[in-house]
Length: 235
Image 1 (cartoon, helix red, strand yellow):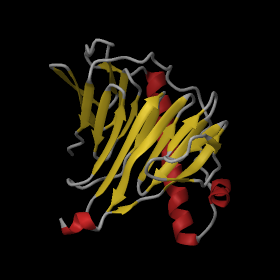
Image 2 (spheres, rainbow, N blue to C red):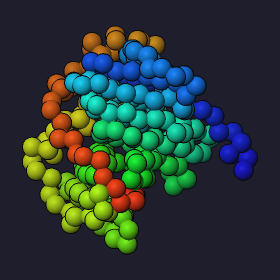
Image 3 (cartoon, rainbow, N blue to C red):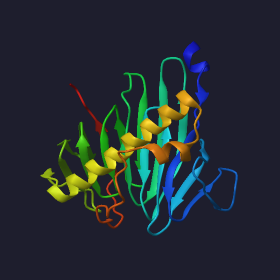
């Protein structure tokens, strides 16, 4: 209880972006154009237009919000022992690279039909498709639960039926790996900024492992099914 009382808000930042990216404060009624370096805090929403993308980072965590996607920050808190990150994806697609968390910390992504919990992994979420690059997850809908390991994916129908895990096509796996490398570059940039006081743009100019933008996995139509899944990356 004493530690909980010390929990403080965490500020994320848009660390790299391209195209039409907008941000809206919890108390605001209108979207405003976002800029690289913009703060993202609890209650804020970020939206990417057509052909746009945005990387948002905090701590050891980095997410990539894809084109035609919208998410809202539900919680970003940290105390001396634990941290809590909770996001809500309402449209589109998010790729997440999550830093190693202790057993009392949580990182969740909620969709209209799903909630995911992670503890140090790399994965992608849409409303109806769950693709795992590193670690493993279980996907649960209705009375069915399916384990999905790294390199695999499952589809979920609007009625909540989960497909058996299938191997990610090599092209799709390659694309996810490239996004992961982009997220790693972001982490290097943030570490450099904290250590040297450089600006984000200064560091972007000097990074050498930047992966060019590529077409991502096709978007899927929204579905239903009361879906939830969690992550297990036991070593």
